[in-house]
Image (cartoon, rainbow, N blue to C red; front, side, top):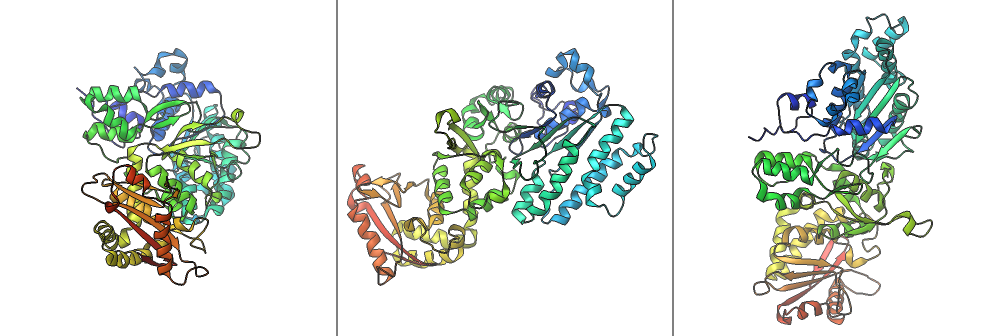
Length: 565
């Protein structure tokens, strides 16, 4: 009989004691310990088992779990006597920043203080021991008091490490889970600079100048730029999604997933599950599956966007909405299931995210939204240039997540927008104009934040409309944009999947230019003339669609005013 799937359980002992479904990842302990690294930073997407693995490491090493070898019996780490002797022999400081999602600096600092205070309460027996001097006890009281200064707070883990070393006679292991969650929230809410200084000071005392530190692990989604919070940590080993280390320790391999599907009587669903949840690549290890979605699927037997629904995705939403035209164009390519090329910088500098393509795609890669299909090594490219990575959306679940996100952008004008789509399909030009102008008033700011709507490619500026069409009409039409046909590149083509039922549609976008056109009607006529002059319909005609079933529309824009002809 298949084991019960425990959803959302992040305590290793609870899973083992209740005999819930578990895929053995204890080999991570051996690999990490034998690496010999002082401080290890491991970045993986959310819900990829980081917290569970940190719980596993804590319960393996911590003195609090001495003589709890029963938790590890039958698992891979228990096969070697060397590691069996190490179980439960180290003082461990374990903390998590996963729930620090405040909207201002003061509240964020207060939440960090609460976490530190809880550690001091846990280890309050130290205060009553002979190892603490009078000054140490005074410091202890200050941490637990009403007001705590920044110097005291940022040194709190450092001080606690010293107290534990004196008490147990052994250096400590420090585990910090989801270290970057406060940084992401601070970027979204605009208080990043304040938090960076505080965090840098705390990390320096905890991980760099700490003589009582044996080993440490930090986990997070991103590798925050060294120049911001890791400037003094030259003892930091960084393991990202492109690293070879620990590649199979987070997430499920295809063999693990397929074995689980067999166990739960879902063998015939392997290819569907692969389409939805496969696609993550760590180092050179392909076919890594999203564990959160797999667990939920094993529990329910239903395909759904489980992983996408575990977070507000507020940062991704902000970056796409505020991104420039080129970012939106590349994102449209990704939504079509195609790939893009970009250099990648795995050190995320949040203060460089605004408008930086490389930083945004780097963040999306670290977050699990993108996967690397191919990349050039430094040996393959000219000196002084950056390697190009070929990137694609990770899997079908991620694609659905972004399509839903884009639909929500139009939520304020959803009724009007749906009416526009219907008007487009039946060729009601008057209704198209009325509805599009209302949609423009509500959505224009999402898709062009510059002072000149025309930008480098005027006909591309109303990019949000194209993205909206992709979401709403892709089941009825094959939608492409900025492709070659005839003697030029059309803006948008809607090729019907059923040419007996629907007309093909060509859309050409133009910005009204008062220097060359008297009215917006002239702009519309120029757009239509361009469709004819450059024979954009050639591709459709070659595919057997008659001219009588090809409709062309010219869109003229002036600010938030639209004229369609």
